Amino acid sequence: MRDLDRAALEAFQLRRLLELRQEVVPANKFQSPRLAGGFATLAEFKAQVPFTFKQELVNDQIANAPCGTNLTYAAADYTRFCQTSSTTGSPLRWLDTAESWDWMIRCWIRVFQESGVGAGDRIFFTFSFGPFLGFWVAFDAASRMGCMAIPGGGMSSTARLGLLASTGATVLCCTPTYAIRLAEVAREEGVDVRALPLRTVVVAGEPGGSVPGTRALLETLWPGARIVDHHGMTETGPVSYECPKRAGVLHIIESEFIAEVVDPSTGKAVPDGESGELVLTNLGRTGSPILRYRTGDLVQPAPAGACACGSHELALIGGILARRDDMVVIRGVNVYPSAVEDVIRACGGIAEYRAEIATVRSMVEIRLYVEPLPSAAEGLQHRLESALRDALGMRIPVNIVGEGALPRFEMKAKRWVRI
Image 1 (cartoon, rainbow, N blue to C red):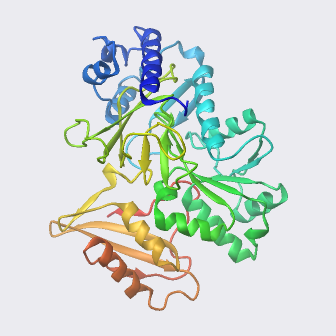
Image 2 (image 1 turned 45 degrees about the vertical axis):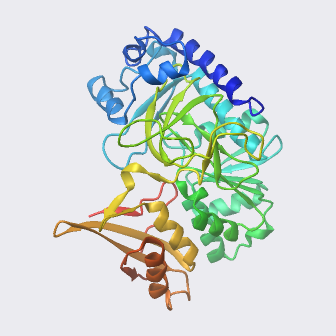
Image 3 (image 1 turned 180 degrees about the vertical axis):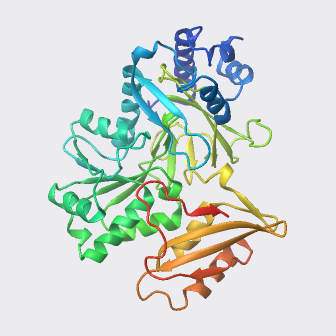
């Protein structure tokens, strides 16, 4: 679909959307009222169909336990169960039919193909194979493509490094945080990662893959391997692939998604090229579709037109910039975790960090706890505080802690803590 111009792409989206509506109405109790008004164009769809918010899905599942009413078919038709790895509130449960799962596999195949991954590659997955969607679909997509899919769940990092080496894996799939952690363990164990045949590291689950400082660190830790970012959600499925020509730019798979960028406060579409919140409608997950979903992801779209890679699909500069809910206002300044992480990673010499957010005398304050790499503590506190002040225009206190004092993460990191 990368060869379709904008008009042809939107015509294809509309045809898929009308097919989805025909299948969903009236069977799906959650979605049918949203589609009751009817529409004949994408503009009418966006004008008539209301946004879907996560809390609506949560409330529906509470009222209609265990999985809610966003189901188009009978319960016996669903073969896959997943749930979100929510750190706060109730996790969302999600069911998929074999057909919807197959649609997500095709999306992940596109991600792999755009990353230069294909038949014959050996893909090592470090995720724990729990109930969250994670890399489950990617694992199935790897097998479908003719790759060797190597599971690394339920193992120590040392054991994973051994299996990564012994299987001759050429691709590593994990979160950015765990890619950093695995390289740290390799250094501790005296393993030379340059001797591995690894040529691609696909990171997802966090925005780090497109954060310049984190990306540069990953490229240093895994020399010779291409770092590839990707993002998706349990509610939507696999959404984006990294541009083959521009590092840190994500393309929405618009043959499978209708994407909008809206003002987070008003819900109105932002002018071309302006930043806002990403809204998604998936077109092939018929068993449990999502319509005009307010993802909470803040993005910066590139100006309309063909990308350097030839694709007309929506390009997001810097990938997912931040989660709307993660922003904190400190002394009148909007502070995003990704902006702080960029400074921390660019500073260098840091093994792990933790940010604590507290309200003191009605004022929101942030304090950083930083664990240096061995022999890197000298001058680090002053250097990092200066870099944060230059980047954010405020003083953020930095506290140096001892080796091993901060937790390590294998899946999504929990570095920002409200106390």
